[in-house]
Length: 312
Image 1: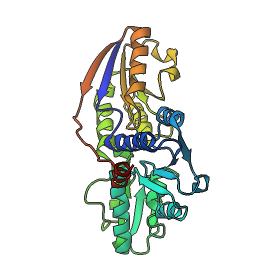
Image 2: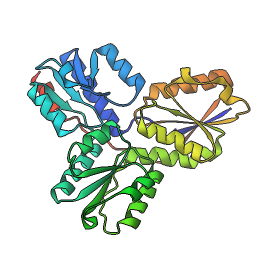
Image 3: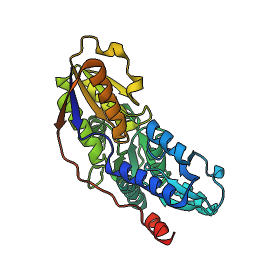
Image 4: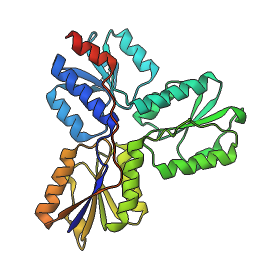
């Protein structure tokens, strides 16, 4: 069996930064450290941090006053930030800077009196946080059909933003439908879908045709990982989203001689290597690393964390 190993894959700069935040906070201040929602959408990462004393919560009333609280990489609403202050919590903001960019764009458009179409998935942590910046001004759009149903009071004061982890193709189709229906609609100066999401999708789009099966390492609640699986399936290749080698079904490989392996932006390299070890052990696989694009993005740790560590 030949295994094509896609690059880039796995952790993006925002995920790296968020994980470094939690790791450093635990090492500096000790357990428990509270985190609002999962630090990133990956089962392996979350379980690993739980074992080290991180406590993931969805309600701030679960956090004792004066505790340390991290906001996850997906961002939070102003309401959550205020609730943390009211409980006298020491908040460390591990929001990905690319998500923060979308929040700032939402605030800017809302202040200018625009209605904002936020293209994204209902209930996703990132979408909840962004909509919280200007709830009275934002309308969620998930599909092209949603665009057709929109009723906008002033079409000349309309803007769109997107969740950072969407399918590039899906969001492009929705944006085109918006532009067709509302020619004056304004968008962000630079696309909101993050570089890592685009790069991982590009790699699957290019390489999937060379494989009979695509394995995407990532968790089911990871939006960008789901998009990778769907993209593989759209090319006509069988695609599966798995947390790790333990999720592999041996029957998937009947008659399969070539497999593409990639990983979503919140999946650690350890689970990728476990999967490769499985394929080498069970199928005598040879690994062919295929690099589509180089990534050299790095985000610094939040100022508040650096200050806390320096004072400790």
